[in-house]
Length: 184
Image 1 (cartoon, rainbow, N blue to C red):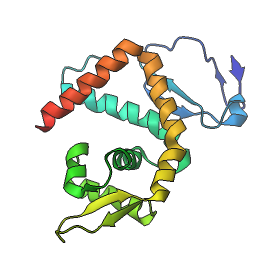
Image 2: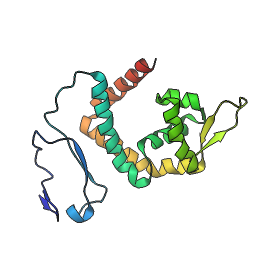
Image 3: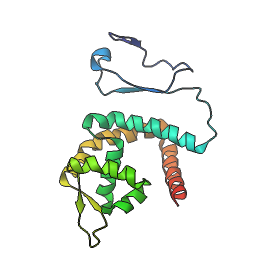
Image 4: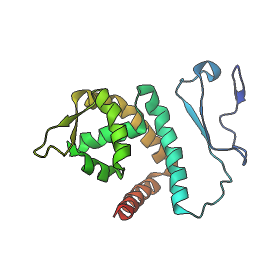
């Protein structure tokens, strides 16, 4: 148990069954740990939700919060990081192709691309068809992905450790398959 100015927190005790899922940023002066250390308290008696969509949305929100906690101090959102990593791995893409890969509607993608372009992390490339927008990562965008690599990797490793190697691999394969089936 560590005592802080505001509250005592037992970091090893099991959580009560009524604890709601929350993300708490613990300040360095409170617990004498890193200012970006996060404690994730997960509800033990989560009701079983029968709807696949609701289960996926709930899981997506929880996972996104964990990644956001690590990326936010670096000035990047999960949505921005996903687009930057996609462009880094796939190379320049037409906007419709990027939307298809990410299963995003055009309006949401345009809204997300706008600040990336304003920061100079992506650029629009000319194509033979003037109506077609093709986006590419700039050198500044590559540096952002590189700057975020450790935070992103640590988030990956945290979930992999919590799930175990076999469940991690199965979950990733199943979600890829489900995403492809649903998008078809």
